[in-house]
Figure 1 (cartoon, rainbow, N blue to C red):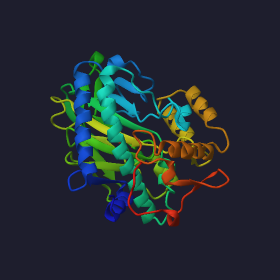
Figure 2 (figure 1 turned 30 degrees about the vertical axis):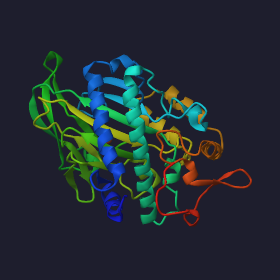
Figure 3 (figure 1 turned 60 degrees about the vertical axis):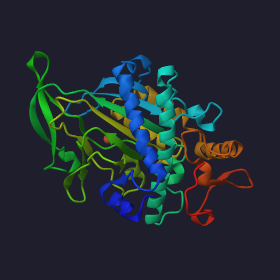
Figure 4 (figure 1 turned 180 degrees about the horizontal axis):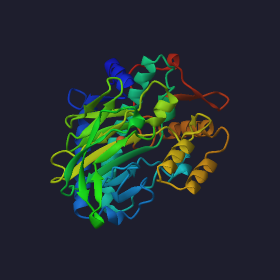
Length: 381
Ligand SMILES: [Fe+2]
């Protein structure tokens, strides 16, 4: 349960921390599954099976080896594997595959990880929708105003591998003043590259996440840092029996006043000796959902283009696929029918659109209001 205190913290800083200990079996299961996913990722990495997936396209699908996602002067070195929560071929949203719902990695060596990721995804889907419903309550919004578009949205589990860093001199870099955060420092290493060129390496450079919501599920060190604009201070995010939830750029765009916090990963004292592993889960709204004067999917791809992940042609393709007027309403209505027939959402999703929308006698879909809500407890599937 995301408490009123959690929501207050989220609205002030842009992130909050949830314990995985306690009486809630779902929380404890998230703790077990995050560890199991990380262990399986390491096994596949050590057996050099990740690259064999050969499914990399622009960093959004499959495995990306030795990636550098920094757009500023600081360089990064990291490999990552992205697993999507996919929808079955007969599902109404399947037509948006693979741009938004990915493709299953159809190799037997990935089967175990895919099963773990689906189970974890389902628990996190529930946690995400619960959190957004709590924010709706705190902001006196109608039930489903924020969580409704998130239902059956894109979900990505990303496992990140940071190799040990080469020897170098410690360097502290000022946080980009474009973020209004002068005074904060990012800890990295200056190393010597080809031709004696100095390279400033960090684990992860300062950024705000794309999309609506991120769960920082696991890290093997405590080097994640958030910038707290409300206190104008750096806040460490220690690893331990908890997870962090943070708002992303598009949530801030959709709901002004919910800050998407800048965060980064310092290269701590052990970075030259040890690899680092982290696990994140990203939740996006349905790509067909309106976002300003365009669709959320179009906005996402425009942002990905600006960051160099996709080309202009891919943005145009996505925009064209999402350009049908009333597409989200039509797909919500189709999802309602699908969920009724299958008695719930597909695997990997805790709640479908039927938690937030109803079918009118005319056959069109409409939003459920708070008064129409049937109970206080979250009832998945
Ligand atoms: Fe991030």
